[in-house]
Image (cartoon, rainbow over all chains, first blue to last red):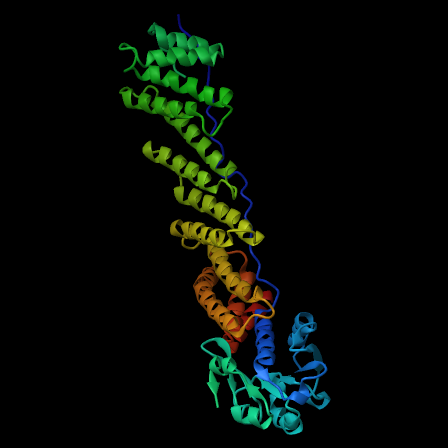
Length: 178
Length: 284
């Protein structure tokens, strides 16, 4: 007796069964601004100011660099340097600058460094710039780019003139100390 | 399935129960048939056995990925081919083997999760091995690219969740996208994803620094950032070259953004401005 087995249909399932492929995005937060803010905070903690400047708020002034101002305002406003609460101030121009413990001059206003140095050296203001050659103009710390990385150089002479004592760690980790 | 008249008793009995949908009895007779001296060397015996165990896998084991019946079906079809000197059943057997192999591929898809990705890869490799062993030709490069892109996506999601073991998921994502590139070196998606994985990893190192991180940590983090930018760049540059050559490449604006970003992170203003210019031109 013949046995009818019937027709078997072999189904080959499709190879692609709807994989859901995710594409990444680049983060919106600015790592370079965060780096600069971190350096600025370390400058504040690793430098010693004269006694008469160790009272009241610890003022950090940012000139013409809004992103850095916003970052520091958000992250450092409630932090302390010793017994002094940090306050961040924004200045749009050099002319607006008032006395601070630290003044950061963005690169496009760095040419005004001598003006700030003359006005605030006796007030022990740490002037931080971000342009080649600004130590000669009176900056104490200048951000530089070396080997594709942000680093800094220090003028001990300018620090001495401002009666600022640069901590040994800050000196050791600098790219250059003049 | 093919008919043979006046066949021996065990296989005939197995077939009878198979057609009655009584797979438990069918398997018993089939198991006896392959022990029988008169039946064990017949291609037909194994051919019928293949169908019985295939249905057992589907209907009794409910396509369980640990089903022993599935392997018995594959072995049976394979043995039938080996014994089939007249090629009566071979074409049909090969189609069934392809079907059974595809069930492993389906299991690979189903188990492609963070918890079971190792098992998934095993299933995928089994799928390929079965087809290779029977010289069944498919475009393995295409299926490898599809599978490993999907596997990498699973790792990417785990990495982005930033729970435990992020290093492991990062490394696995890179590994899987790299496997895509070994079979398709111009796979733009894989190039982009690896490039951006490295880029984001570098940036995350900076962004995850504590706000009061000590200077040594900041400097160390920058070293790592630069290192990851140098890992990222070749992949994004290659993706860009592929796009420029006119070949298929999506996410072009993100590729340009990545290349611009790499040079921004490296403080390389000139190069960054070059990519800004390209970005503007591309948008126009």
